[in-house]
Length: 639
Image (cartoon, rainbow, N blue to C red; front, side):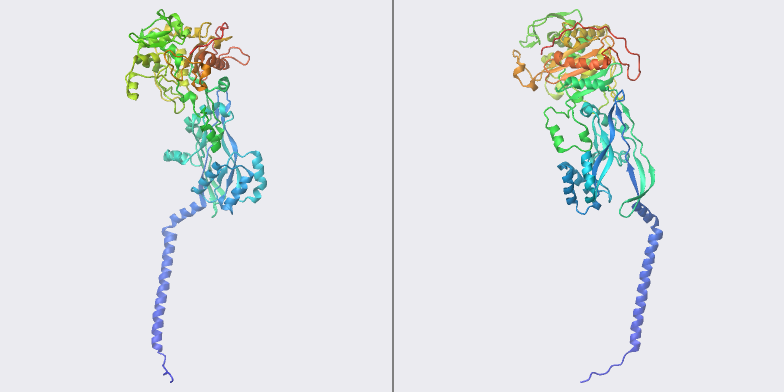
């Protein structure tokens, strides 16, 4: 059957078309309105914001690190400088296969685990596109040559030269100059916002020693430059530049020749030497041995090198001069003698009989003298010259620990000296209150007797001993040791004795210590100037009352420490020296010659003639040469 034929309804179709046309026009107008509104929003209302964003993408502000200030000794010898360091960097965006690139680089130069770890950490941290990532520093000329020849097949690899800290004398000044190394996130977290801005673009930060204490002065002020970049972050041109302000150069009061003499005199032995000019507190030598190579720390020390230092039984990273606490032994007897004189418990005429030991009343214990058979009849002068323990046992017991503590604090024993270095150890001059607070035990008479010869709880650093010696040489005038003239805030009154002549009399006794009958006579042989000194030994372990030990039968590290304090010329002091030789056995024969070489380096010219240098700051006239004393013979103090 055929379907019925239907006619078109033109009126209905026109009505549908009209509706669709109106809807279409409405939608077009609506979308056009949206586009116009959006354009007005972007181009008019948000114009300033998007202009700023555009400029930020096109113009970047880059920080420029300032050159670090140089460090020199008093004679202008450079101790810390800036040298170009050639380092290997990778631009990640230019590499097609990073792992393959690193594999090829490892065939040309050595990359240890530390290099790879630091590289991975840096490339994963926030950074700008096309910013190079350091891979390895301290490239040698041979390594640079190999890399340059093969650079055409290593896309993304580049060699850059940046100024880094260099210490030309390596180990010699390691503990006193310290070192810088790369600034880290923890350092930045500890800074204020202003300080963080000062370190924008800076890679290095003073970590120890002078580099740390004078960081603000050595660092300088950061500079800035505005650069125009393309979409990929490449620099097209420099728009504006504010150059950085270099750090201030720092002249230390250290003397290269005295430092070298102290270091060489110690030889391969563990120990420390501190030399101070008592006239103005200038530190002439500051040696702790063994030391370390600070250059290894600047751009990042390898795991191998750091493990070698950490596992070394001699502990080369430990600053013995500043932080080492040792029993001072007999070296503090002159100071204790002055305390006894001023307190009225003894005088220069008073004498005792020394049978080789000391006993308290109603106490069977004998505190033995180093000289087993005793010194016979002994006064204070002879007690200092021959280091008679028995005399100081008796005097110390009468003086008491409270007065002993107060007097020794004025000599900087048990007190920070105020030197311009961080982390100085305070040492320990014990008291009744200290023992009760830290040991929860009462103070005993035996504690006082041990303290009277610099043993027991008494601990001092070589720096404190040098400072105490300088104060003695200055007849009680306080001396604050300084390396660059900016001490910490330490205020102490000068030590004034009731009888000022006791200073001179004690100096005479210390001069006789280097005489024919003294315990330090070996150090004054053929000296061109009079030397005032006091030798000492400090026990490493306790020995029973009636026991002795054979030095040849015990371990080397259990032997007594050797100490020596001295100043010269005795009649016009220009140098005070403290020497510690760990396990050196005898102060007179071991530490004494070290002190003598240090004093010779300062007081004698290149021809071996006496020539006392002028004071560093005042540049005063050279002191008149004292009369020589060349009649000394060798000897030593027994433990």
